[in-house]
Structures are given as C-alpha cells and as structure tokens.
Length: 198
Image 1 (tube, rainbow, N blue to C red):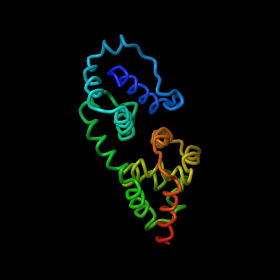
Image 2 (cartoon, rainbow, N blue to C red):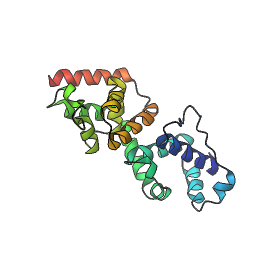
Image 3 (cartoon, rainbow, N blue to C red):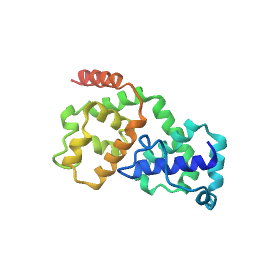
C-alpha cells in the first residue's frame, strides 16, 4: 500500500468500527478522503512508515487489532496508534494464533461453576458473560465465537437498554466478519466443555 492507501484503510476501518451503517467489506474498504487532506496532516509520516514496514494484510490486521482492543473505538486517536499500536497488534496476534486454546480455556472458566443458561441470563442487569468480558476474563474473540454459535447478541440487544452493552454489541457485530474460523470446530469445543462440566 502507498501511504495514502494506508490512510484510507485507517479511515475505512475507523468508520467500520464506529458507524452503524458503514460496512468495510460491503464498501470494499472505500472512504471519502482526498490526497490533499492527507498531505495536510502532520502525522502523514507515520502512515508512510507503516506502508514501508507492513504488508497489506498486516496493515488491515494492525488497524483491526487496535479498534477492537480499546473500550470505545470512536475515542481512538492517531497518537495512541503511534504510541501503543504495535503492542496491541502483537497481543492480538498471540490471541488469534492460539484461538482454540484460549476459547477452550475461557469456556472452561465460564461454565465451571455456572450452568450455560445462567451465563446468558439478561433480564436482571448485566449477564455473567458481559461481566466476565468487562473484567478481562473473557476475550472479545471468545465473545464473538460464542455469539456465532449461540446467537445471544440480538437477544441482549432487546433486553439490555444499556450504553455499556450497546458499545460491546457493536464491537461484536463489527468484529465478527474478521474472524474466519471454522465455527463447527469451536462448536465442538463448546459441547465438550459443557459435557465435562456437567
């Protein structure tokens, strides 16, 4: 990617993770910006640096890993990416490369003392699954995979009229297309965990 294309990728992914109606895949990563606006930015040298250091795939992963790691993607500013972006990207790569192991481990902790239905009860405040995510005990990847298997997000959207859940729900929805894992494999892991815990 050229530095300008890196900048466009950044804008497109920022729009994807912060705007309900924008879909990075549907719009093929396109965003409205001009080369003139790019060259007027003081941080353009950082985009030039990234274009030299990373492949096209790594650039996309770098931005995705940063937008899904922070609490509120709409508050991610470029200075944070320059300062902490590489560390977030490294941690994300470690998680995604060990996805099966992490998913199994986190599910074992989730369902070791609680029935599966109780983990997703949402009628009386934040359900256990959300509390565990907010406390850092469950990763965003496990949350997305569980939603792909159990489809709990839409039910929570109805029952939880809560700004905290709305932010998490948006993150699950927007991150989901970037996880290309074999869902049948993770469904099998979940079944094994639940049977053992019983």
